[in-house]
Image 1 (cartoon, rainbow, N blue to C red):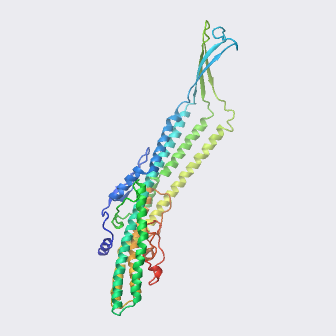
Image 2 (image 1 turned 60 degrees about the horizontal axis):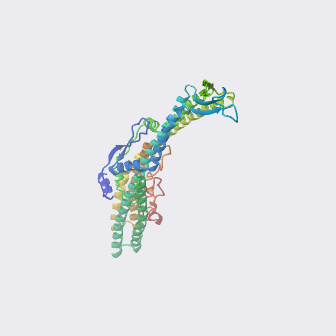
Image 3 (image 1 turned 120 degrees about the vertical axis):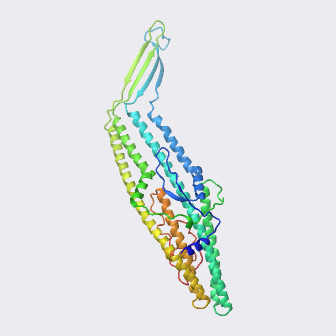
Length: 479
């Protein structure tokens, strides 16, 4: 098995990095206590891509700006209403100026200030402060999503390049098979159709290579967009087989990790707290705010100045249709937010269970490939070609064996990629169902090199197709 796996890795291009480090994803949100991030395999190139994307992505900068704007609202909400200054005059005639001449004529200078009922300002500040913490959770979500987007695109790039290397492997197999077919035909032991079929498969391989290179180039462009670089700037990558395999955790541990780190759940819990504060504020709304006014009225001349002091309060005579309704409204919102929290916890537990189930299937598939299918496929392909050389089997058998070999190697790559995709979703705390849960688990029936459906292989949604037939043209149309 070690010899086969080493040979398998040797078929891949060696221009990329061959080592993998284990680093942690920085996901702490501003204003929130950071939770321990899960460890994911991260090579130096990927670590640099993540760092650059977190620094350059405009959506993340926008979220930071909006969070800062929300924090600036906190002191505004708790501030006193602006005082009012009034300047006036009272004159006892329309035709003559009587200030200083008549006792009832004067200037007036008045100032008024409204004082909210004790506790209202504090509650308003707390409500807005909770909104700012919710904005911080939006930043945390964008950080998680940015890192996950980079990891997914990098994984797709790695898979596309590894599949291109498999395409080269298939090309070499057909070159060898074509040489054997040509030799047998020249010596009169084989049919001309065998030579033509081998040449046809080589041309189909060249056709598929264009599409697969486009897939790899598309992922490079996506990564460069995420990090704000020129779209066609070259990016290196490692091999899927070099990444450490994910490990299965207990469902309870996975669910608790998701609940602890989910920005959506944290925001929903903050929404519940905010609603409770709003209920408390609404219950204080019937208590009046006090409006205090003070003024002086200089009368001029020999008249002594006068002064004035007023205290005013609103009368809640419409509380049945206003204040009481506001209490009922906020109580209903609080109940709705509590149910939202319950729903999110249920979804997070479900997704944790689903991802673990899918990961267990992917790991079992990987082990099946490593422990048996890859060895058997290579032995079968070598044996079939040797028997064809001596005329014991038909060229159709060589065709089927070659397709099966590369198909199994591609299925192995697909299963590896699927396992890592599930780990990326776990680290992202995604609320979406596991994507492409069946990808790479169909053995030789996957959309693989030689099966005529590998153009979309770099996509997470690539899934198994029909098993290749022994000699049908649809099963041998190259990659």
